Structures are given as structure tokens and as C-alpha cells.
Image (cartoon, rainbow, N blue to C red):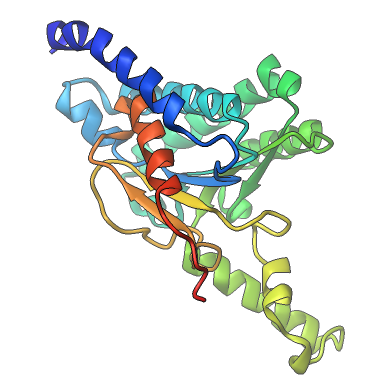
Length: 258
């Protein structure tokens, strides 16, 4: 497998340059959402521990963010852990939470985040997370809140139905407290009560690892998103795979239901 990659590497480099030339820099998606799927299957496929599979996935995320920021994509939303994932083996969940905390600290201290002006925010049920992780998230959001060049939206302990349920509860509370009349509830009001309040809807959503579904990712926000599914498992994603997704997006005519 390693020998095969070495043989093919020059060809992929040529193909990658070709894809870059094909991209219309005036028609890049402003907001890309990514479902990071396949970390465990990747680890199993190359016979490494599950923890190392997730570590490779973290490293891949850093690479992909660099690629997207180089293209000047303004907003990136990444789904790294769902509310349903809490039902997994307790030891596995604990390991992922520890890795998430370490990753939160590392990205906060990454000078590239600050030099590029990346605002980092987290979407999800933060109260379901360990208190130590909540504290690191708060510090990271505070430290980057004034940046305006890019936004990294980390969907952690996130579920689409859970987000909608939370929004309904927030709106119902406003109605109950006479701060909002039922007839005043609009799409804008719903938007304002979602975790992603203030972010544009995703133009393109990418899912790795072969599953052809969104699984509730940004349910409300993705109504007019273009979708791209690839069989490549997340830790194995290459820059050419990302460029293919963007090229596919640019080849579509977006009518927004009109």
C-alpha cells in the first residue's frame, strides 16, 4: 500500500494542480460543512488502535482547515461528535472527550488561528460535556471572539433534532414570559435561537466514508445546501478529494427552490 502511494503521488500532484486551475475563485462556497466520518473504520482498516485513528482524524482536520483557509473559505462547520455518540462504550467516549479537550487547547494556542483571524465557536449541548472541556471551550471562544476573517464552527455534542428541540424551548420560554407573541414567530426568529445563530447557511456539505445521508447535521440550515459524498474515510482525505467536492459544487446551478 505504501509503495502504491509513492508510485501514484506524482500523478496526484499533477491532478491537484489541474483541479486548482479549474476552480472559479469568484464562485467558492462561503460556508462549507463537513461530517468527519470514518475514524474508527480507518483505524480498523490499517490495524491501529481506535485512539490513533481519532488522532489521525484530528491531524487531518488541521490539514483540511489550512487548505480551506488558503482558498479563503470564510466559514467551516465540522461535526466531530454527535449527541447519539454518547451511547457508545463509556471508555471510548471518555477517550474522545479527553482528546477533544486537548484539541481545544491546541487550536486555541495555534498561531495560525490568530494570524489568520479565525473566530472559533462551538455548537451543541455544551452542558452535556465534561466541566473541564466546557471551561476550555469558553476560554477558546473568548480568546478568538473578536476575529472576523474566518469562522470555525465546531459541532460537538451536536444533534439536529436536539438543536431544533432546544430552539423550540427557547422560543416557548419567550412566549411564556410575554417577550414574544406567537404571531411574531418567523424563520428569522427560529434562526436566532439555533446554535448557529449569526452564521450563513452552508453552501456545501461534505460527508466522508461512504454514508449517503446527513444524519441530522444542520437540519434547518442545510435546506438548500449542495451535498457531496465520498467513500474516502476522513483520516485518509486528500486535498484532491476536497478540490473535487468544490469543483462539483461549482458545476451545479443553484435555484433555491425557484
